[in-house]
Image (tube, rainbow, N blue to C red; front, side, top):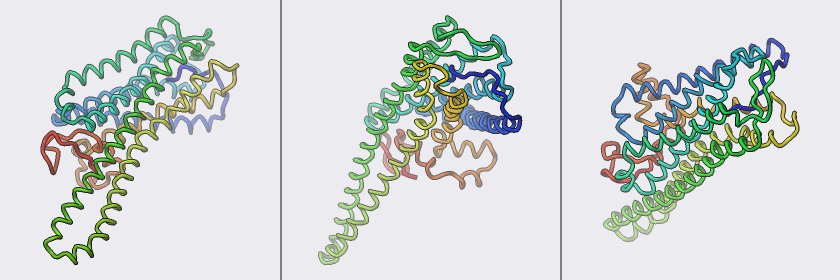
Length: 364
């Protein structure tokens, strides 16, 4: 959501322009490839469309694909040439930027809510989280993104002053900067922190309960081998169970930290500046600093496919599409491997153990 970028000439060295251009080109290509792969997998494989939770991942991929197509290229060209070359397209581009960035963040928020409902109330989730409900939630996210972007921009409600020649500057007024930032980021990030914190607590309780049941079952089995042997094994088994439980809890915490950490790291700096700049006299923040933080936010769109769409089902689909079933399946990153399955709802045919309607915590 880069409405504050000043694209007027900065006369940087040409060598630096080339380097910046190459880096931005690679970022755009990686964002395009990752999110296109997610969309292609869903189109090609029906079983990916059968899971309601994947609809939210698809919507996220589409919003990130829009960032790569409708937003990034125009600003990349501007960074290399030091001038806005697209005339009156500026207002449309600003609206696309706000819409796509907001849609991406709101979809991340919806995914966190979906995963919380799935693990907190698995039986109600199966009954109430229908395709229709999912489409309504996605529709609300996209509608809200359009309402806070195209309407204010087209009616010129967002500007604090007139734009300069050969630039695409939208110095936001205080009201729009604060209101749009809260809708696009601050409210969603509070919801995400709350849901993922609650998910960790539920996962922690479930892990300890399972560990306790396994320990009790093992002790009951050992009773048939004599009291002395059971007493000798009791303490080591307890210690092993506690270590196993702690290891699983740490893994859960690591996964959720990656999910939230990447999102906050990418977007928080920009939105802090977005709310600060309208209240200070220019140039309180350099154009270069603002631009770097804008691209940090957009970079989140290249990372989302890795974090949210690399569960086992998607990995198999990607491997089939890329024709590297054996190689790709063996090179999966462990942190990604369990991140998407951690708190998602599993139907009976997805579970190696247990029946339909159970909730599962998969840890790699």
